[in-house]
Image (cartoon, rainbow, N blue to C red; front, top):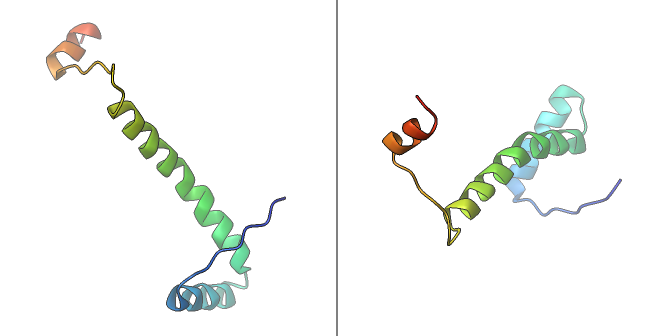
Length: 71
């Protein structure tokens, strides 16, 4: 397993500590869970941006797409 060091603003760190203490879970477990839950969304968003910025991308109107999909 890899180790990652992260600097957090003081208020964010205090919130994480309070949550950890309240739930009897480690700060690391929360950070891992948050990253796992958010990483897919970030990857999809950046993939979509890459596709929008492709030089040879083909864009269709709604009507063109419906016709292509036989809707």
